[in-house]
Amino acid sequence: MTFGLFASLTAGDVWKRIDLENSYVTAEADSLRTILRIADNFITDPEEASEIREYVKNYITNEQRLLSATRATGEIYTTISQPLTNLIQIYKSEELKKDPVIHEAYLKTVIELRSARFKRLEAAKSHLNIYKLLGIAIFGTLTQIAIVLSHAGNRRAQFASVFLFTGAFFAIMGLLTIFESNRVFASLVTFTPLSDALF
Image (cartoon, rainbow, N blue to C red):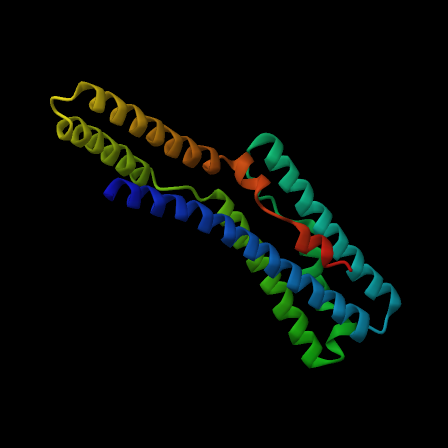
């Protein structure tokens, strides 16, 4: 029971990390939608509004490209996003400064976008603590010993119990190892909210 509880809690940590990653993607999408609304409704200069929309589109394309690269190579790419830098620089625009409220709202939104991106990349780089995996291995070993001792005198029961538990143990360790892989983790992250932000 202790082994099963510890293993399930550890697996829960992995799924929590995936859910957290997807929540940051959603936060990025929300910020991008706000930026687009500001561009469409409060920027009177058509060229600047078009420029902002282009930066948003480039941001989405760039992040999707980096995620695809992670799925292919397993490496987490944390390079500075040029489209994000461009969106931040728009804050200095004289057009935005005409309305202090919109100017402040825009700055707050791009900061939230940058923060969500940073947190998403940090979550992608984080992995299970090695001591948790070591703990599962120790609990597994102790459980094997307990199984053998509890079936002393019955060789068939010992063999069957140890065989079944060994299969379950390696299945759990294998799944945890697979989901900790950057490639697999990246494949479980959905970028649909970012793509939908354009519509």
